[in-house]
Every structure is written in structure tokens, then in C-alpha cells.
Length: 211
Image 1 (cartoon, rainbow, N blue to C red):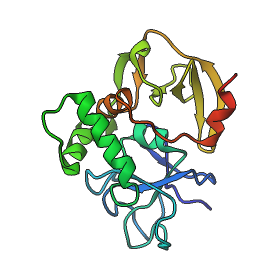
Image 2: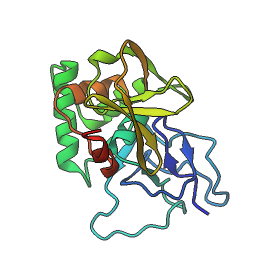
Image 3: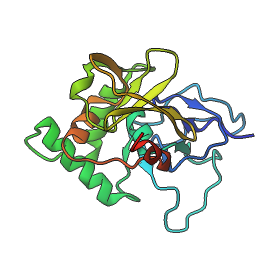
Image 4: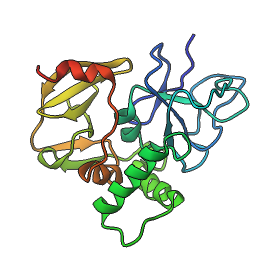
């Protein structure tokens, strides 16, 4: 029985056999090690990270007494939920993300990562609820995740397409929408995507390149 440690683009947790292509955490433990149920809390701290699946041969007991391990379909999913690249296991990506964010937000100085975490925390949630943003689709960068308006779930923008998300990868293609849409990806991350940060997609996205 899989643990409810898979992350949807809206940041909620659920159980699914698909492992995904990235791993992460939310700054510590917020699950109950004895229950293995969806946690009542949504984070331990503001430090929401997106990590590689394997790093320096480290082994962990998932959802034991340590922090709450999470899994993402891909980095596009993790960014939409409100995570950022980890500075320890993804240093180059973390620095590239920060550099793009600084350009995108027009910050006068390069912030430390705790300050970026504070910015993202304000962007991604309203109390315990996911904060969404109504924005014109024509201005959104590739890698933006949307809330679909027709019960299909979540759509990721890529080229002329909006790809239908699933836990195990992308399973359909829609025309890229126009007009105002409901955006899950936090504005600070949108700024980074607009200014040169390139997230890693699930391999299934490539099947829709010429669709």
C-alpha cells in the first residue's frame, strides 16, 4: 500500500503507486509516523524543497521518525505546489532559480534562500488553503501549471499545448488556453520561469512535442 506522500500540483498529498521523478520535503516532519495517513498539517517550516531521488548513496526509511519525504511527478509539479530546488543536492539548479527569480522580481540584491522561502510561502498558501492567481494565459511562461476548468484536473503549459497532468506523467494534450486562467504556480516562480529558469519535465511530455 503506497503512502500518501505523492504531491499534486495544488500541493495536496495523496497515495499513488507512481513514484515520480523528483523527491522533496517541507522543512521537517509533519506526518504521524504511527498512522501513515494524510497529515493534518501541510508543512513543518517554510522551507519547501525539490530534490533528486538519489544523492550520495543516502538511504532513508520513508515516513519514519525523520522528516516527511514527498514525491513529485516532475519539477513542474513541484514548482506549482510551491517548492523550489534544493541547495544541497541541486546546487546548480538552485542558484539558477535564484538568479532568474532576482531578475524576474527586479530585486536590488540577491536574497538568501530563507528570504526566498518567505516570498514563496506568501505566494503559495492562504492559511491552509492553496493560493491561486487569476492571470492572462497569453503572458504565462512554459512550465506554468493551471487548474483546469472542466473537471479534468491540472494542465501544464508547454509550447502551443496544455498537457493534462497525472501522477505518472502527462496523458493528454489540449490547446493552450487564452484569456484569464487559474494559475497554481506561485508568482515568484512564474517570474523565474519568465526570466530563464528551465524546469525538468517528466519524460512523457516529449510525446506531445509534435502532437
